[in-house]
Length: 132
Image (cartoon, rainbow, N blue to C red; front, side):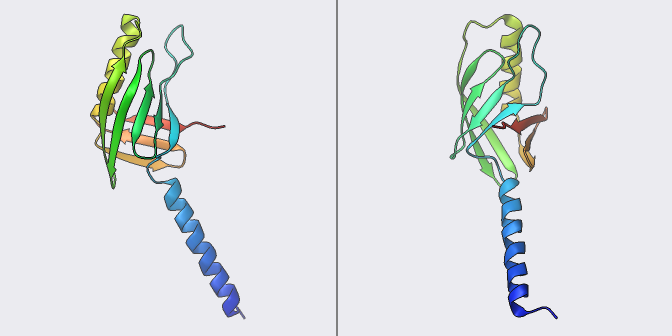
């Protein structure tokens, strides 16, 4: 026979696990993530974003870098790019950077599964949480 104490412990454990699961699937504020993409020819660099606790973003693109801001409500997300530094990039990398910033700016919704954040807009973008 199951005691009241065992039932309470099981209920508390289930509640704790569901809260943890929801936190893992929430928007990844306070996280650094890398775009799921191959490096460009002649480079090992892959774009990454650092999302602050209030949605502020530091971007490191194929060559350029800059800032932006995410605003999130439910599964809706808006990205507003800030100042982007040119850094005298080669034309191909500059174009790839501009296309990535435009794709971020077209994002409308997001979903998260574990360590992967998918931003959905004209072009889906997948970012993975950086490991230690």
